[in-house]
Length: 409
Image (cartoon, rainbow, N blue to C red; front, side, top):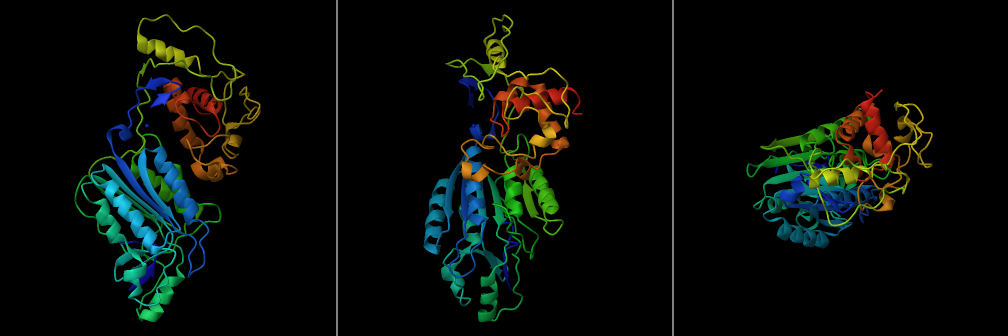
């Protein structure tokens, strides 16, 4: 049986403004290594619009989650093997090993293959010389590693599978991949497919496929386990494709895996320098902090002085205009802003070409419920609004905290 894509053989960090925040992050205790591959410019099949964009964005996201990333885009078979060899050396002994692939793939007799851009597949023998067995990569990921995470967005329509089926005389060619049996070892494995076995996934009309778009939105969410993140990914993809595509997850993890773990109530300790002003250089609180001989409390109070004030003390409502004190967003409501364009990168260091001009809600799938949960974190620990950049700026997070204090109305 030959099939392309959709069901691969399944199985098998913090200084803020120079004040050190004692945040609990799995990255500080774990060594994480990822292999990210994306192929779009196929030489013997029509080009795919999004896989390279998908892979590049995922590589940046994973770097932000403290992964050592080995990546390759539009690689030939030889280049792919060289990249995998580099990954194999780096991944040995890692706490978390991760594979992300976007592009064409196929299965033959229950075995899955990734297709480099120079694959022609004129006959079944071509598989050994032109394609890359997924099992081969999984073996490299399994050497002395604890947790293995595999994400396969390889479910586009694949004309090469049809060519191979015809020339090799193999029946049952379709746009789907086979399941991967999960092997025992370490703390377990999660395998996520863009769609159900033997089904075709959408490449997407924007810069990312529906699966990768949802994965980018959820894989680094604060204090969310990878299994819960994938539940959210599944829901987002199902909704975005009007029920036509349902990601398929196979998981056997013996421990909760949280890629962005933060203790929002962690104390602060004094750093070596004073904090710079917030990103918009706007008015900040000037009230003197209460006297204290406790260094941690002094540091906390110093950081609180950097939290910008809103221009108005009026209550915050989801769909009412807000006077933020920032001309770029003044007079707009939370509901309006989450459907607009981001002002800052959603991930530190992410290239502007990836996020500029995109709609915030297209990546984050923000709604009142999700925003309220985020807002409650800011309300519970007010200095958390300064810890990470926000696509809509710090004042937006201050408004969210006030909205939560009012009951998220």
